[in-house]
Image 1 (spheres, rainbow, N blue to C red):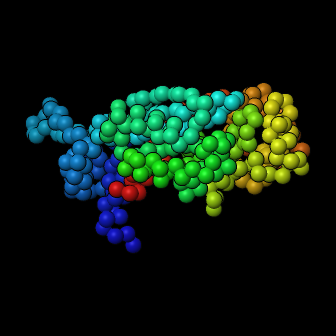
Image 2 (cartoon, rainbow, N blue to C red):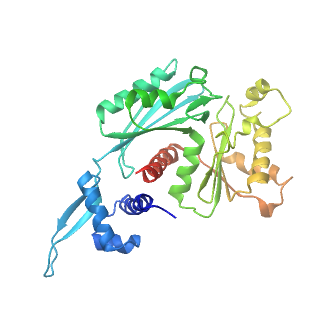
Image 3 (cartoon, rainbow, N blue to C red):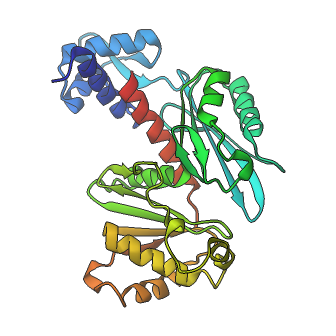
Amino acid sequence: MKDSAAIKRANKARIRALLRTGASCTKQQIAQRTGLSVASCNTYLNEMETAGEVLGRKHERHEVGRNAAFYTLNEEYESILCLFFSLLQGVRSVTTLVLSPTGRLRLRQERTFPCLDAAAVEQQAAAALEQFPNISRIMVGTPSIAEKGVIRHSDLPELEEVPLKALLEARFHRPVFLANDMHYKVYGYYRQKQVEEEIITLVNYPAGVLPGTATVHKGMLLTGQNLFAGMVGFLDYGIPRAEQIQQLQRPTAEPLVIQAAIALISILNPHRLLFTGDLLRAEDLPRIRAACLRCIPEEYLPDFVFLPHTEEYYRWGMYWTAMDRKDEEE
């Protein structure tokens, strides 16, 4: 049984979920759409308005009676800082995003570094916080395993074994969440496409580094015991790891892509298998699908979808993860 604090937290989360759509609603409308009583909505909205999280504005009615207050989320109440770094074709970069409480993009910056170490990440975070002091939490995406806030098996050797979560929290005194980039991307796709009852697997093949995948199973992100579920670069391809990485170029990568796809379909049985990364093209998918048919009956194959760009889903995945954590904590 939930205690009163948990019930209050869950009910406020229902109000936020409605207002995050950009809706402007009266207490009565919020009660109707959330299933809460008008009295409960009145209590929660008063608390949220006092804290500055929501704004209540009077709108005149044409009929006789008191003016109604319409409530919206306060876009200036807080900001979410999203940082993600990458190594693409030898170029190291950090992308900085600042998002509003409704997910509106307030800032996007990208900077390259000859050495992308923890100091470089801290530098970008500090610059964003100077511009947006109302940042309430920091979301970090990494092309690596992110186990207990520590970066492991990273594409960027200068970040290997760096406890980035603890470093950022100690310096900036805000909650930090560190996760694998693929986890954010597939979760963002799932939330934006609203495919609640589907199993979605995203496969990423960047040139010259180990591939990764991530899966949402009917709303649940599959992360695994050590947060690397979907690391198909760890599969046995019958060749040494160094040779495997050398083969991750066009066109020599395709047999490895096919082997990983067969494994993913056999184990996860997804509704959609999403492919991205600079090693792949849309015209590759029919060949990959045909090769999978040699092992898997056609009626069990998922939809094969090519995503040329994933930053939009990356951004939304970081945003929705931040909102999920906010609703769990407050």
